[in-house]
Amino acid sequence: MNFYTILEDRSDYNISRVRLLEKAAKKRGLDFHYLVACETDMLMLPTLTKGDLLYRVGPGSKATNIEKLLLNYQPTTFYTSNLLALRSQSATPFFLSQNRSTLTIPFIAALPNNLKQASKYVEYLGGFPITIKIIGSSHGVGVIKVDSLDGLMSLRDYLEHSSVTGTVFMRRYIEHNVQARLVVLGDKVVASHANLRTSDFRTNVGDTNKRQRKAEQFNQTIEKLAIESVRTMGIELGGVDVLIEVKTNRAYVSEVNFPFYFPTTQKLTGVDIAGAMIDYLIEKNKKAN
Image 1 (cartoon, rainbow, N blue to C red):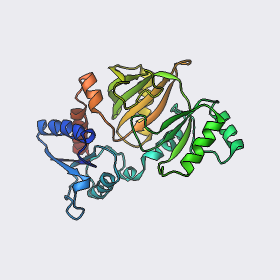
Image 2: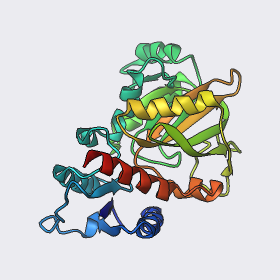
Image 3: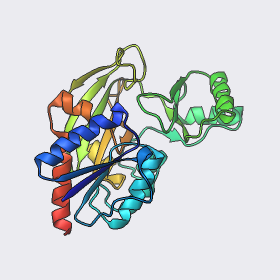
Image 4: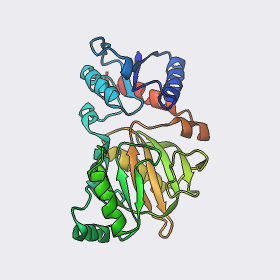
């Protein structure tokens, strides 16, 4: 059995995941192959079979396009339907919002056209502060806290005339001290950790000097919320970010990430997430074939 993984480039962010997957795959007797998208000859792609396993480890347009082509061979993946691989990450809030039982952060999928509309949108989101989220980045990049109408309109003008190409959302600001990251595989949470707020309102900020993390298991309500969110997305694996509101202690799904960075959770918890992922695909493949 072959395990194929695709990465955009050889950055540490991608390679660290590949190494864990390679170790787990070889331990299980699989033939491991990885494709570096920026180095790949598109006329020399491998020929897969239904007996092969496929997982794209990270974002990137070239890696995503290769994945879409390889899906034509119908390998085993974490998609409930391989057609769902065609959806973009920016579609995540729309998927989640269709499931009324999933508690997602209220959002508006556009910036206001004028001051009157801005006031209306802010009122709908519960008043200032609000956050602006630009889809496509990670580690808190593209998440902006806005405290006034003047600030909102100024930011809107800048984004309208800048080179930003990602989808932009307005979202309710959820005051939180803890962001839960839960790794969902199938119908259960296999590992989880907490990102703790420090001096930055973004608990997942990329500055490691500001970040504080710890392994933590969350209550059944939060785990159920994470599992339901992944299922709604039509995938069987996801890194779910949940914000726990300070005043109400309510849990809101912030994002469902797929693919996602799992080495941090694996290191903090000691859970072999890479091995669990591969075991899941092997079992799914056996049932299908």
